[in-house]
Structure formats: structure tokens, C-alpha cells
Image (cartoon, rainbow, N blue to C red):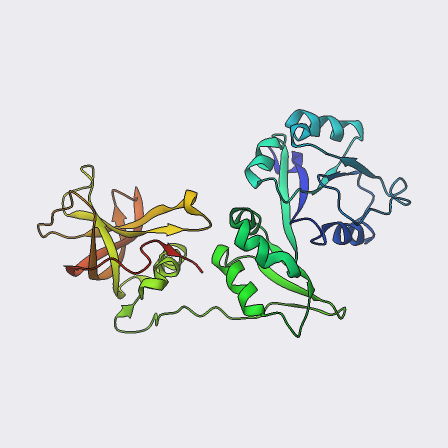
Length: 318
């Protein structure tokens, strides 16, 4: 389908009282955005703030409420869009519904053009502690996350920054302060290991960050010598002389723990009937390998010895 035939969807996520309604109201009042296109505004939760709809009709804005998840279906969304002869869609999404549920409900020709997440800074840490999977669900694909009601005197921006960066390094972060000012997050994220060292030493607590970095920018590791603790694993389907070196990584919750590994060349005898913890030193080579079905970071093992399991066997980003 030609891109011009897609229905543009602007998605606003976040938990109740996060500031979605206020931001959408301001956006709809901005002539640079509100150019007369017939806009279907889908509201999927009812908060304290209500929309001022007095100018909606003349601005071709049509507000429709989705009060129950059972109503959030491709057929119903398409019907609402067709009824207003729409040209674009804005969705104020329910924070308790998942992104997978949203993607499953969008009609085939609806395409998400932008995702913004809004959060009340005074409740964010509680949500992150008690509903971590939903926090990750909303952060991992958004282009911008905005923290509202931020108290400059009491808020530790680094704490918020680390939580967001533990999920995504791509999303921009903005802070809206209680004094009416705002600013973008400008905290740099240096890697916790020296990428330019003769041997890059990756501590146990930093494995998840290293694994993500080498997958996002594998070329910068080409030819680099690395030392770390990993779990060595085998598989009958692996080519001769190849083992898997990696660790289990948890992004948000126990249910998403995954063994994250890289193809590694090791030609010495090793019993991998069961995976085993090892201290390993290797050189990264960007090359083709059958397990990658193409080119990728292959670990050429220099030395490998048995090791005790780390204090935290499952690696995390935070």
C-alpha cells in the first residue's frame, strides 16, 4: 500500500492524570497542527481534566469515547472514522491497556506516525515499582516521554533518567516543572566501561548494557578485546567449533527473561551438556556466521575458564 493511503495516527500514552488531555487540547488549538483536517479524537480513559469542545465542530475535531476494551476493535474504530469522513486520528490511550492490544485493534491501513508518553512525576516511581511491565510497555516505543508536576527541589532527575534509559536510549525526555518552566533531559549516558581500553572489562552488573550496545553498534567493537563473565551453552545445531556465550537478561519482569547470546568460536573440547558459567576473554570480529544468516559480531575466544555464578545471575538494565 502506498504510504499516502495510510491513515496517520498520533498516539498519546501514559497513566491516569499524566497530562495527556492537557497536551492534546493545546495541540488541537495550535494552528500549525490543526490545519482543518477532519480529526477523530479517540479517548480511552476518563480523567479529571475534560476537553473544552466549544471550538471542536468548526475545527473539524470529532471526539469519541471508548469506555471499554471490548469496544477497541478494528471494526469499531473503522466505523467511527468512516462516520466522520476522517483524515487523521489522535488517540488518548488507556495506560492500563498494552501496546500489543492497541496494535491488534488498529485497522490495517492505520499507521502510527508519532508516540508521546506523559507521566505524573509524583506517581511515576510507584508505578515503576508496582506495574513495571506497563511502564516498560509505554516507554519502549515512544519518541518523547514528558514528566509533569516535577518539583525542582525534591526530584532526582538521574533516578528518572536511569529508568527511562534502562528501557530505551532513543526516546527524548522532558521535564515540566511546578513553577511553569520546562527543559529537556541533557544527561549524558557514558558507557560504564572503557571502550578504548586495550581490554574492555565488563563487570557483571553491566552485561545487559554491553549486550545492547554491541547489538546496536557492532561495528565499533570490531577488533576489540573484551573480558567478562558469561554462561557458555551449546546446541546440536551449532556448527562445529561454535558455542553460545551470553546471559539471561530481564527487561521489565520475570516473564520476559531471555537468554541473550552471541555466536562464539571456541575449538577446544568443552562439556556443554548443561550451560556453565565461565570467565572469558575474546576478540570481536564482524563477519558472516551461519547462526546470524549474515554478518554480525562473532566472539573469537582467547581464553575460557570455569567461574562462580554472579551475585545477580539475571542481568538487568537498571
